[in-house]
Length: 390
Ligand SMILES: *Cc1c(COP(=O)(O)O)cnc(C)c1O
Image 1 (spheres, rainbow, N blue to C red):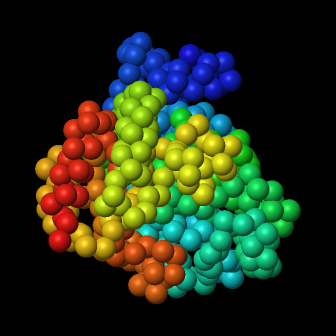
Image 2 (image 1 turned 180 degrees about the vertical axis):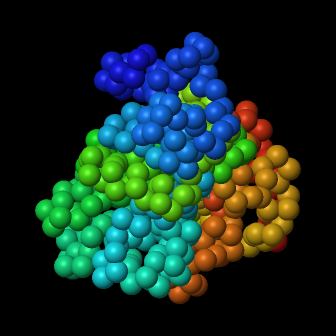
C-alpha cells in the first residue's frame, strides 16, 4: 500500500483495512507491531529514524493517525487518550477573547469543558439554538472563531446541514469543527462537506467493542496540522501504543459492523414507530423524521443511534430494570446494545433549564443499537415496555 492515498485509489471499505501503511517495513508483519517504547535510539546528534520520544510520535500511533486522516480525507490525523483529550487539544488552538459557537445538544463533556475549563482562560462560548444557517449568520459576532457541531446531535438526533453551515461560516472566516463520532467516516465525511476539523471519540464505533477509550482529530490544512502537532506534543494527552493498535484493529471491521448496526436500527425504529406505548421517536433514518432529507443528502444513512419517549403511564425505572439483554450504560457504538437515560446520565452535566429548553425530557430513552440478532433486541424492548406499563 506504500503510503499511497488509498482513499483515492480504493473504496472506503478497502481503505478501512489498508490505509495508513499498516505493513511493518522491517519485518513484513501485516499488522503494525505495538511499539511499546517510550524512546528511540538516535544514530548521532540530530540524527534519528523519524521517532525520538513517544509523546511526540510513536510508530503504532502514526499508522492510526495516517489511517484516520485518509479515511476522513484530511491532511493530517492525531490520536489522543480520549475523545475529550482530542476536543480539548483542538479547542486549545484558540485564545483568550475568542468565542466558540456550539450547536445545541452538543456532547455533554464538550459543553462542560467549555463552560468549566476554557471560560477560566477567557475563551467564551455561545449555544446556537437552531439548525438554520441564517441563524448561524446572525450568531457570528466578530469574536467568533469557530463553530463546533454534531450531526446528528445527541440525544434528539437533530440534523445540521454541514455544507450550508460551512458556507456561512467560511464567508465570515469562521472554522467549522465537526464531531463525527456518531456517524464515522464510513457514513459521513464532514471535510468533503466543507468542515475544517473533524474530531472523534474513538471509544465508540471506531473502536467498536467497548474495550478502549480513545480520541482522534483530523485537520484539512497544513498550518492547522502544524499547530495541532505542536499542541499534541506540548499538552501530551496522547494515545498509547496498545490502544492505538486496538483502535486500528477496530477500524478494520467498521464497514461490516456499521452495516449491521444500521440495518438493526432501522428495524427497531419501525417497531417503535408502530408501538402504541411510544409517543415520540427521534431517528433521522426514518422518512418521517424532520432531519431525514438533509441527512440523506450528506450521509450514507441515518446511523444506529435513536431515542424515544414512552407515553404517560409508564414507569421508566421499571422499563430499565426489566431489560435483560440490553444493558443500561453510558457510551455507545459497541457491538452490544446499550440504553441510557440522557437527563440523568450523558446529559446530566448540562444545566436543567438548558436541557428542558432543548427538549431533553426526563422521559427520553436513548438506544445504541448493537449487532445482536435484531429480533432478540426487539423482544427485549417489547418485554420491558410491557412491564413498564403502570
Ligand atoms: C463519547 C463522546 C465524546 C467524548 O469521548 P471520550 O472518548 O468519552 O472522551 C465526544 N463526543 C461524542 C459525540 C461522544 O459520543
